Image 1 (cartoon, rainbow over the protein chains, first blue to last red):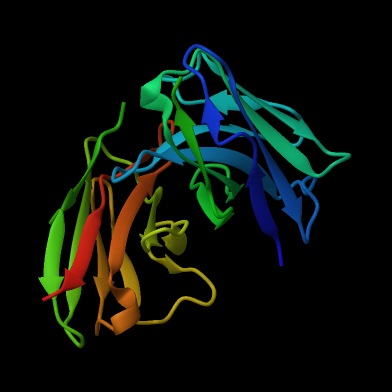
Image 2 (spheres, rainbow over the protein chains, first blue to last red):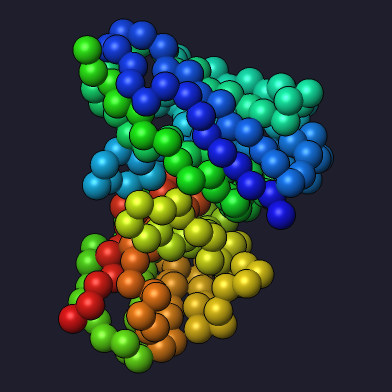
Length: 121
Length: 106
């Protein structure tokens, strides 16, 4: 069964770039049936979709974050990554990676366990 | 942008109760609506996709209905493991989640 695991620094300084990687195990990231997303959740708050990537490399981003987000995929390592530039304290959150299914009705299953990223000097 | 609202924001209830959570979209989203359950410190878990389809492995006490702008998640008989926060999510235009409904013990 497919499992996802986020990794990356837990502490990032303001104005720097947040970089996370999601490693997919138990299945191929290249499957045409799925695509891959990043979602975040500030402490005690709701969920915010960051963006998605298809195995073709095509991406879509949340308009509110689009100017600062880059998502990439490395099929040779079965990984996809998130870069979020010019971070502020407002970017402090638990970051999840998730497998997405569906082209119009799009849902997420499974999710990684999440990784807390704190933006602080 | 499509805004999602959920009601109630929280409810206190008892084991065995029937629970209904409502999700409303600011414009029609057809059936492009999913439901998730999240427990403290854990990732969300998919319950219902496409408004009314039960995800494999999810107990049949969970059901979803609705289309257009109004949707409901129903738990027919609440079990102890169901105390959690529930989120709806639309994918009709970009992708947004509702603010969540916390279900706790009365």
